[in-house]
Image: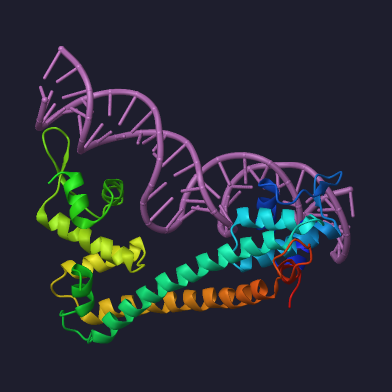
Length: 129
Length: 129
DNA sequence: TCTTGACCTTCCAGTTGATGGAACCTTTAT
DNA sequence: ATAAAGGTTCCATCAACTGGAAGGTCAAGA
């Protein structure tokens, strides 16, 4: 399989796949012409990576997940621990964003949004409320 | 005011303040010794920047907010529009993260997390569910 | 056969918003 | 005199790509 085919298959840009090879996540063979040649297993792996990334796992997490995925003797506890940690990070991020959202929504709500210069948003940014 | 004093005042690391000068957000004067010298206005500006960044505004947004803040003839509508857009971006991001959270929480919930290799998380990452 | 266009390759730079560190200068206190 | 605590510049690094230039390869059509 050439790169654009596997890209289509895995739902990732070719450029990203080259990058993943660069950082050692996949290791396609090369044809005589120098083109990368992807196996079914490579395609499967890239799909796995794509999904993992879509769930917000970092590249390093993906590397670990991949290693676990390919280890037939893994303990599901190890996978779960990784996922749980990531889940906690996501929840923390959501909490942060929700604080921002609340503050911002309040400021926006209180701003008349007309042609006058008076603006509660700017005032809110100026000082602790 | 030297940099560490203004840093304390604004709640920003000195390094960040130097960076903000680099990208033209603040322009402190210089003393004879080459040290940066910050005015009260600079300190105020940096506090404003700190708060804006804490609410998730990008540096470019901050630049615009700062311009509006310093323009006595601004229309609050312009500020509001900026904030509203940012709010929308935050809400979109929260929605994305919440999707991840839900999927991830489900997978984690379904994984036994013991010493056996069978793992719904890895299965979930493998293919569309 | 020639050419056109679609692929493929590598390599370098840029993105965002800082942050870490090295090497060096200035001020302040002992 | 010296040492600690500040200040300075500059360069590199982080994540995870993405864009673009310059050029090689391949398949199809005139």
